[in-house]
Amino acid sequence: MTSVAWWWAIPGIALVIAVSWAAWSCRAFRTPTMRDSMTSFEERSAALDRVRTAEPLRHDPAADAPRPAVREPSAENP
Image 1 (spheres, helix red, strand yellow):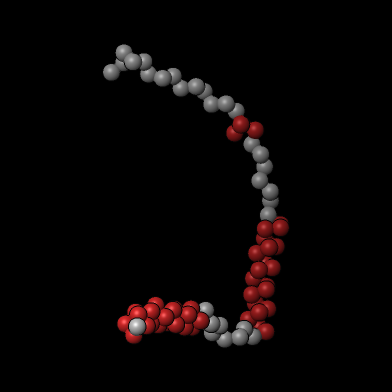
Image 2 (cartoon, one colour):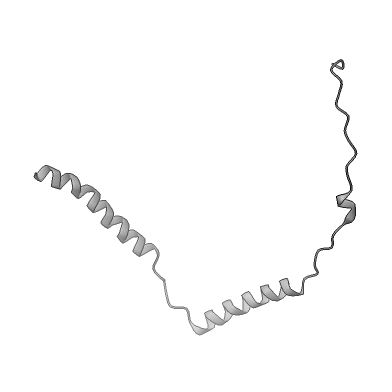
């Protein structure tokens, strides 16, 4: 019975190590300050303003024109 307990201890230890690593790698390094928060907000607002004031794409009707058909080479042509 002890061999079975030791056998199940291996995945249990691996689970503890994986959960510990996940908690450690996903932690916040520091709480952002008000200046950091406002700088990030201004950058996002500037990006949205550039998108909002950008000139929209115009549709080109020539792009919808059918292309000329390409003739298939005949079987006699080497």
